Image (cartoon, rainbow, N blue to C red):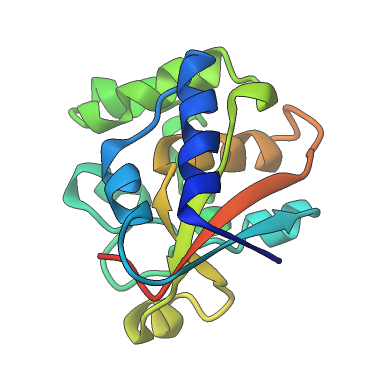
Length: 168
């Protein structure tokens, strides 16, 4: 874990965007907020699959209320949909359209950071194996989780941008 300042984060996000990759402006705003930031290297797939995913109604088929939400848990629920994000879209969950695109053209070199923040008590209770909450990068993280569970690719180290304290 290496501490990083807002100037370094802004520069890295600009480079990522200049390379044609998506950068969420919500993340750009959070970089300016009080707190510390760290780059955390994830070197094993099991570490990555312990990240805790969001709980929103748009993604409810993969995140049932009061159920564990590690990436392993959520991506495993995709089995009920033939492991296809497109099936979720066809069944009325358009939020997964970005996942379809990422899944079809996945490229580790375009992954960039996945922004995470510490878990809150409810997340720790619901996902006791969880490590951090995925704050930004939810589409690409669930796609990568699915690909890992399906052995569709070999895991490569992933860098997280840890934002502390907890972001909203």
